[in-house]
Structures are given as C-alpha cells and as structure tokens.
Amino acid sequence: MRNYKKIVSLLLFLPLVFAACNKDNLDARKAMHVVVNGYNGSENALLITIDTTAYKGNRVLTPVSKFEMSAVYAYPGNLAQKIVTVTDTVSKKVIFTKPLPDNGTKAAINFLYIHDKVMEITPPPADTATNKLGFYIHYSDNETPVDIFLYRLDNTSGQEYKVYLAKNVKPGSWIYTNYLAGNDFGDKNLLDDGSSLCFTKAGTTDQWAFEDNENKSRISVKGMGLPLAGEKGFVQPYFITPGIFQLDYARMFFHPDRVR
Image 1 (cartoon, one colour):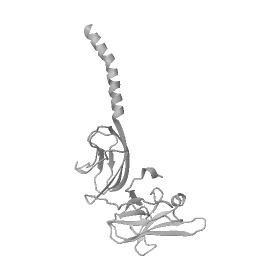
Image 2 (tube, one colour):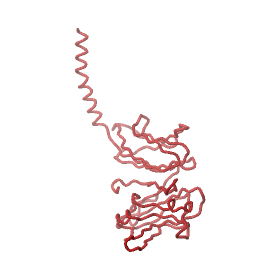
Image 3 (tube, helix red, strand yellow):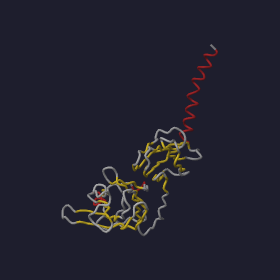
Image 4 (cartoon, helix red, strand yellow):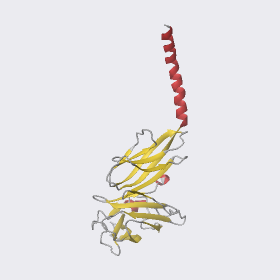
C-alpha cells in the first residue's frame, strides 16, 4: 500500500514537472526561416540537414537540377551553433557546411555544386543608385558567347519591346550588369504578362543560344523578382541552365520583404 501511494504521488507530481519543463522549453525555443538556393550538378542526390539531430525538414536535392529550398527551423535558444550540411547520399561524404547566423529570424544560403566542386559566390556590393543583376550560365555543350535581353510583345498593338541586359556573355563565369527598370518593363503587370528573358547567340536576334531551341533559351520573368520602376539598391544573381524541356534558373538571393 505504501508503494502504491508513492506511485500515485509520483504520477500526480509528474504533470507539474512536465508542465514546467515544457514552459521553459517553449520560452527558450526560437525559429529561423532558412532558404537554400542553387544547383546540384552531380549524378547523386544530395541531402540537406540542419544540425546533427534528426530534423523532419531534411530535403533531398535531385541530381543535375536546380533547387530553391525553404524551411522553418526551430531550435533551442541556447544552441551555440547551427550548421547547414549537404551530404552526398551515395558516398556519404559531407561536401558543404555553413553556420547559420547567431541572431535573426531569416537566413539565405547559396549552394552551387558543379564539376564536383562547390562554387564560391561573391556578388558585388549594393549600389544605391542602381540595381546589379548577375548571371551565371551553366552550359556544357559549347562556350559560344550569348546576348541576354528582356522581350515583350504587346498583344493589343503588336509592338515589340526589347532591352539588352548583357552582351557577349561567356558560359561558365559570372557577369554583373547595372539595371534600372524603364517604363516598358517597370510595372509588375507588364513583367508578369508575357515578358521574357531571352538568350541568343552573341550578335544575333533569332539564333537561340542553347541547343538552337527556343524553349531552352527563353523563359518567362514571372517569379524572377526583377526590379520594378523606381527600385534601386538590389543585388540579384541568377543561375541559368537549360533543363530537359525548358530553360531553368535559380535565384541566388533572398529579399523576404519583397516577395511577389
């Protein structure tokens, strides 16, 4: 009977203990919005984890494809270090690690894995007088330089609009160009309604850059987040590569207050 009373007393006491522990854990926990953008150029799937503990938000990056991963990571407030790790699922080799910021609620990480190497991305500093658009073209078929331009056809008037962003761009390297949106491409509705980013062989207007294929050399700018008229000070690198059926891109930047 005495043991029974002890067990009953313990059972009555445990909820109070757990309630106190849960309250402490709740008060101590924090959350961070983590975005990882980039390209997996290997033949193996890659696994993204945050920290070494089991995390239900683990993601698998499919081979030879671009990706834009977003997850909310909750962690104890006293956690000394938070690490993003990318592991090869076949060899089990860790190929990339990067700590998350010590403070704040948002973190953006760029990850480009090409030719079995992690590529460093060093965008230029922001300029309050303009925007800087960056392009990296991943195209292994040849190194023919390309021209990059915005294009829009007014379906009502039939008028064509075109603005060159860069010329003689060589695949396999970064190029940055200053850009201020003009009236022809400065409104969100104009960009979302039929505006395209086009890639042609340098010095031509109708020879498509990638595999002589329009679908693999032209893409709608809807969702790319190009600066609108009056916007300045943004630095926006883009990774460009022709996919199986169409031109693909990954935004190598994160402006959480400007998502549209």
